[in-house]
Length: 103
Image 1 (tube, rainbow, N blue to C red):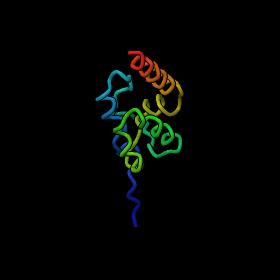
Image 2 (cartoon, one colour):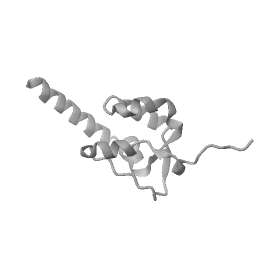
Image 3 (tube, one colour):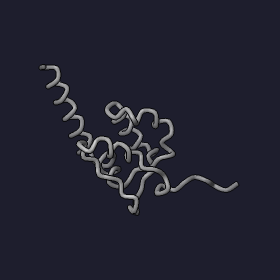
Image 4 (spheres, rainbow, N blue to C red):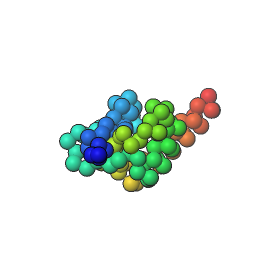
């Protein structure tokens, strides 16, 4: 029986719709010509995706099918490989929540 598992670059980027819907979050736009793609189901990616699903509800229903998605190289670097995006994102969310509570 032949292996039918898709390669990373043939999978849809998990964050494609999110980058379009939330441009203020400053996620890099997907580039389909990128040579480097990562599986969204890698252990490190899954941990970050679960954290981000609290803030991007579109991710929640996809968590059980991450093997069907990939991560564009820049998204992997922004979200998984470095702490910068998540730290800044969570700090912005905390500040926003505090401002809303004061009103």
